[in-house]
Image 1 (tube, rainbow, N blue to C red):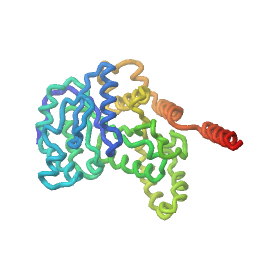
Image 2: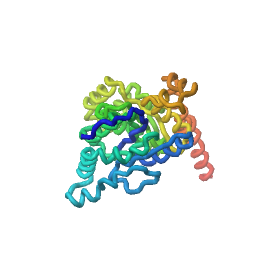
Image 3: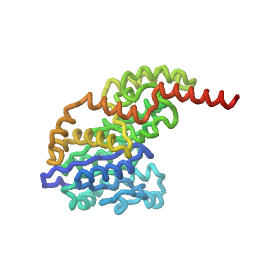
Image 4: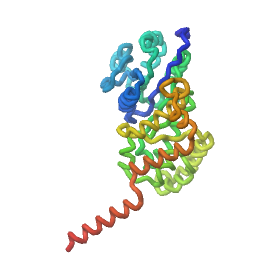
Length: 320
């Protein structure tokens, strides 16, 4: 076990987690660039041993300690078993990580983490690693990314709610849940409700009626009802919409993270009236950012009607 660091300087940062393909590396790249333009000295730490294509400037890379391909070849493990072994190996060699980060004490950290869900819901290695970082005076926020297009499928949305809740309870860090890739939210279908319904996780009983329309899921109504009750009883999960290419949504996420880990109260860069007010606004601020994303990335009923009228008009003209 690594001994607790003797220095008292607080270090702020984000632990970026989420399922494979949810956009963690893209987020780290965009957030590094975004925060750097604000004047923060940002360090990105790659903790994903399977991440061999790193687009951002990486200051600490777990590949120098252990690589997933080497573990799979040497021990005959599959991808999931290999990732768990890698994180357990990192946990056993945290002195390596501490030594690598020593020269960046005055920086803001982004930790790009593996995507295997079990690492944040069942296995304890990641939780132990994050707990040790806290002992080294890191003040971290877990930024949990999930694909926004899952909102168009009620069953998948309930699934990501359960995963998000389980991750929040297991990781034991201040938590910000993100609906990533907002520009693709309606790629696989139209939302049944407005965006605020999904970001605020409102009355989920309405989803049961949509699930009942599916011949497969209607047989599991009681199970889905119990899952929904668990989610609503904890009342912990909500989401912030994000498109990495959209500066406004990036600003919303930054403010939520800064509030969660205390950065806006503990760093001179953020000790401005605007930052303090954004931390105090609360529900109104959350509502406004959902409405902004609703207008940008989802189609209204009026737009759908107009599109249908245009299509009918075109068909009539072609037929004549």
